Length: 177
Image (tube, rainbow, N blue to C red; front, side):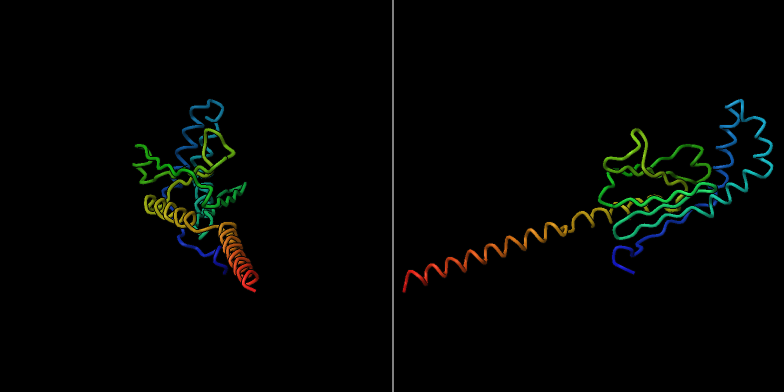
């Protein structure tokens, strides 16, 4: 495995996310009058099935250079966010989430494509604060490393100084003879 793909931390998700999905979808079906006939089907089995499949398919891992996220039941979503692009990580909690012992991490990136929203929303990570801190620490570590362009530029400057010193020495030798 290359250095860029070394997994630093793998997120574990709380199984209560299945209950969160069941209740949240049920709530939105209730407030949208069109969804009320769908509620019986949802609560008698479809909701538990969808929640279980979602829980089985969700994953998030922090590597040396990226944050990788996968989720989905019918439509799979895979996102890879470079750490240097992460601008903000927001920690959300409300009474309903607290009751289920769940937290939400919203990750926003530079130039994100979803104005007013977030590029990644992670619901139900166990030890959310620890995962958030690991992402921020790795981002800071990554951003403190000199980029290949910077190190190439420094090397070029050193070479130019060395060549200038050689030129100056050759001029001194030429003038003495």
